[in-house]
Image: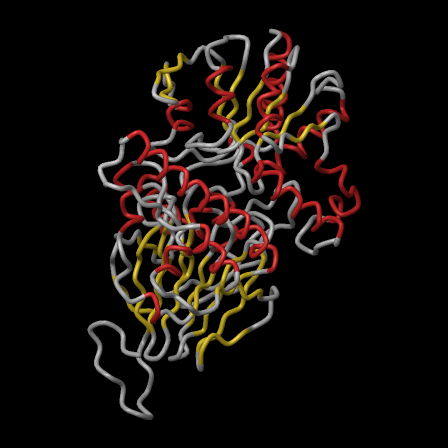
Length: 477
């Protein structure tokens, strides 16, 4: 296989440095895709969907700069849509290689991709029915069948075990502590140079997962920068969350929590269980989880607890299922069960997806609860530009849903305490444990966050840190 713009390699010639291309996850926190091309191997690290602003979403329809069937393997760091959501499109274009990832990522990604395919089909059908798409007819980005083919291609890799992708190219996955199954990846390439990618790096204080494994070094590092310009609140964040609940219940209102279906829901349930046990969440206030995908992901987490997964903190393994069950805890799996939440009397806590309020059942709860000042809306994840969650955090006075504007009179709280990303100080701590790479590329961050982290790495560690451009090509050496 020849990489673009490079001649054939003579038999027995010394391998040349690999070419790295930034296809996504640059200048934004979505669409992560990094193509690594050696003399005989093409590997794609992550294959995510662009989300948020319309200009970004349109990039999902753009083809890769190489034929999908020429990619030998995909390395998937974790199961969030911005890292795995483009995989069925890649398969639709002809990719047939293995998708190398951890066992728990494979389980969670199967849930995420099936749900994404269902939503793609529903959106296309709705566009054709109501004529709002510029395309006639509108087609989904990929189908349920594409998603099922993708799921069949997952090839689980144990943590800390080196596997060969192709001759001369090896992969080792290490715990990233971001969500269940998440990994940072270390690749050794044909010419002997090494590349590591952080994926999404977790917080050392994640309530369910053990801290990320230490960075061991590489010639080139791709480092996420989501919170490159922020510091987490620590215990103050937990207290702020508890007080929001107490204020709302005193007003006689309900709380809707916008939570990502994978991991954030579990983190929120763990905190609610702790508050229930301490008495700060009254026994009379029910907790509803209204998201089929979140409930399916919760089953994977519950299985991991039952199996005493080494990814989990020892105290979580000891607590068992109670760690994620703030009884009374009510699961709304069917549409009717979701509708029935509207008839609940008195205050309630509703945990629903999507976490950025781009779709899902949470929109119905927002439409009902936002106009009432007794209620509260809590955003517990990073809110991407162009999403309703970001609009709420930025102080929007009305939110457009279902073709109408809904007034925002409820209290809105942004609680980054539940973020599963390392903040600036935690990233620096993770980096300084290893020798300096030749270059550290800052990806998966909005421009200000990436630039701030670049400056801090330069000032604090004295490393060469660069914010790459979308589509940029660099050599790994």
